[in-house]
Amino acid sequence: MVFWYLLIGAIVSGPVWIAVSIIASRRIWRNVRKLSRRAKGREQLVELGQLAGGLAHEIKNPLSTINVNLKLLTEDLRGLGGQEHHRLRARLGSVQEEADRLNRILEDFLQFAGKYELSLHPADLRKVIEELADFFAAQADKAGVIMRTTLPPTPVICDIDAALIKQALLNLMINAVQAIPGGGELLIKLTSRRNEAIVEVIDTGRGMKPDERQKVFDAYYSTKPGGTGLGLPTTRRIIREHHGTINVQSDPGKGTRFVISLPPSGS
Image (tube, rainbow, N blue to C red; front, side, top):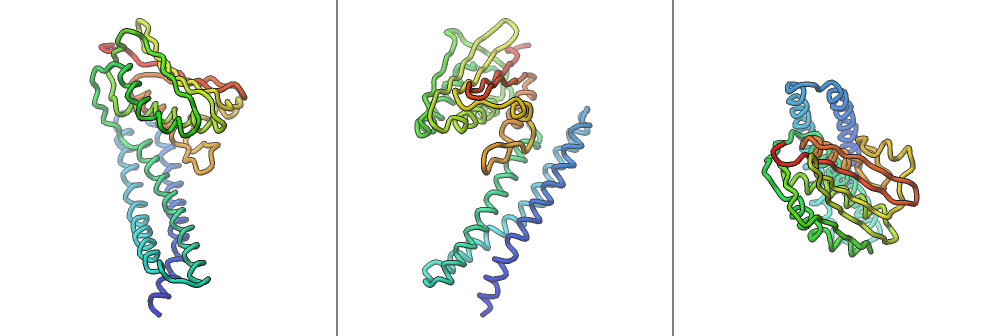
């Protein structure tokens, strides 16, 4: 009897805890946005990082408890037959999906709002792009997307945190593949000028309307079901941390082009 009380309580209270966590994260995020608008010096940036850490503490603990109990209850119900048990398992599955979604939101938020400690080293952007293209090739093939790279014959050296730059480009490449649901092409192009390195991520997808293009770097703006809307804002922040710029060009039905500019090594 105690088990059934616990089970019913978990099913009823699980969504409530998740809703409370989501509301808390939204409120904290509003405070973060207000703070980020005012952040002009080092002290404000430190406070922003501390606030992100507080968000992790406030949400991860109850979320972890929810996930552990959901897994235990699912194990207890596994093997039990009957229509009633089937309905209970389905409800637990729905709660688990929401808990997983909240966890994704949290992880993306922490990556976006957390403090970045860049480890800058001279690196050849050609090698960075080649390694990332090899890593992403299977995902592109699965989506029916032909991926190509266009690289210069000579090294393009920039002082970068290679892992973060890869993450920034990967966000763009994932976004591009999702914008080409029926298959198409994805091009990563690298060129070098005297005072900058240019990386272009170009897709033949559906493109964006002007209002979508204006909001594409806004936090929590997403046109994809289940998207957190933090991938592209994270990419922009990484590029800005490297003293670079990122712009987007897009028209409906004509695909999208993201253009990244990075300063050369020693600048």
